[in-house]
Length: 150
Length: 293
Image 1 (cartoon, rainbow over the protein chains, first blue to last red):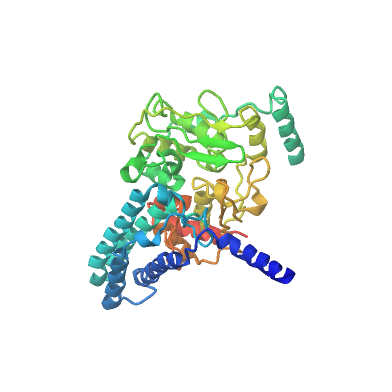
Image 2 (tube, rainbow over the protein chains, first blue to last red):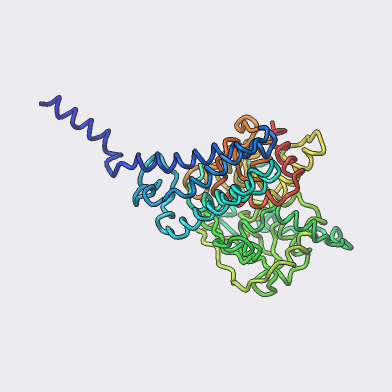
């Protein structure tokens, strides 16, 4: 009995920090979409810098993927309480939930910049740079307000 | 000598009447500014190198509105909260009525036109590396920006930091006009050193501070706690930053890290400015960082 009580106590202690709510699926989903963006930006950035040989088809696929990500509904990824003050494993700041309209407007800005990239990517390596700066500007503008610096 | 000065700083904080001579505001030599002709285009480059808008634009300003330097950005610190003032050309609430010499005394010595010390939250410890011509050019560019009649908000500081006289001693300890990187081997590193240690004021966030808020020059660019209280500002010295020179320059141009994450927090604003600089200047900044010990 004593052993059972101890085990129960230990289990409670381990579980306590995560007790609030389990948002691991949401974190994986939203962080995964940013990973997809980074990988494809890497392809385009590598071509813009001349580190990767320009390939119109591969550039177009990367740009199309950026647009595809921009069309994913963000609503299910950001449940209330999944901010960095409430849970571990995220840098999403509470301001997201205080200014949801602005947060979603910044996501739309990313989508528009991705469309510019979609037009440019297939036309040549030199067209990628300016479009990439535009996409990057939308990333930073959101990170500036809503992601905790490391 | 530094220990003695630190003890004196304590004495002055406790007894503001003491150390009157040591705490008097020091000014630039007006002779150095006579006959200089302003170059507005050069002033614009300095404006982006210095990132004036990052602190002096209104906190919510985006796009074109960032050129309105109405002030209001709040800088949290261990000493209290500093509020950036209006430096737009408004003659009453901004600095429209200032001469280039007034701006020089502010930026190179931390002294207001009325002869009061500015708090070192305004990074004159870095701007001291700028030249008389730089200040004249920058003033000419600032005068082309839109005016704002937003009144200045007061800093929110705890006693004894409300006593500005003590800043005179602080300056005796920490306001140094020699470069941290004493030997710059190439013209590119010389340019980078000027940009980073001077107008760019990178060390003000990337270098740790001691108990009195002075930069620890022996731990140059080795990172620091974030003054807002959460997280830290990364180390960017060669021992800690593995990025290549071209990766650093690309980051300062686009905000993308080598693995295509993007800049966030205050650094996103810095990149808004460095992206406006000529490519050679971003390369120079990268070369300087790699030349650090």
